[in-house]
Amino acid sequence: MSDLDDLRGMLRGRVLVAGEEGFDGASRAWNLAVDQPVAAVVEAADADDVSALVRHARRSGLTVAVQPTGHGASGAVEGVVLLRTGALDGVEVDPVRRIARVGAGVSWGRVQEAAAAHGLTGLPGSSPVVGVTGYTLGGGLSWFGRRHGWAADSVRAFEVVDAEGERARVDAVSDPDLFWALRGGGGDFAVVTAMEFDLYPAPELYGGAGGVGRLGGVAGAGGVFRGHGRGPGGVDGVGEPAHPGAGADGVGGRHVPGW
Image 1 (tube, rainbow, N blue to C red):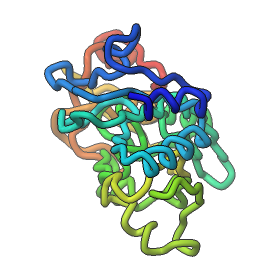
Image 2: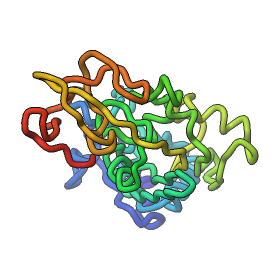
Image 3: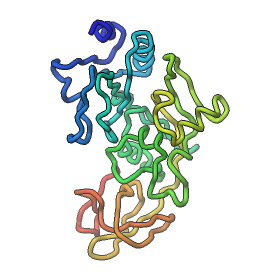
């Protein structure tokens, strides 16, 4: 356990081991049916913490698994150090260039809320609480995929920590092979600490459980709808809200804030 104890003096973020207060909550997956028997949890405060952890793990022979939100957890993490990147939560939107830069801990809800203020949207999936990074590293199938492709196709650059603990900015020019691999190949090639991706003009959606009602911009409605029919912008399946509480004025009398 001394290798893990040494980490406490290297990092700004918390280091938790089994039996300590807060460990159970920090190691818990989003799916509570999945048990994660990790040796320790590191809650990185910033990208420098990620770099320091990877370098220490390399020297000490430790295995690191990364989870921003815990979605997609498999449970195959016995004895590893679980790296949580939830504190890397910056969101920046450039409405002129139509680009967003987000930290590894950001969920789609926050991106959509920030983009909505400028009439823009990212390429989210079906839930606002899913992390942007993990979703995009796996490809990212959006409601707008038929028009704009996979979410990974819209990435302009990644900020990463490599297996030696070095920080780098990866794009199509600086490292084309790694850039190609990260856009849909999963998270095993580097630890992503932030990324930049394109935003798009937000279309309008039409839908409703009892009839058809206008929902306004997709960023306000969240793009989280299921059912049948087709809306403007090449979006299929815009009908009944897909999660509790979704709706809009004129559709069940409920309003959907930007998520």
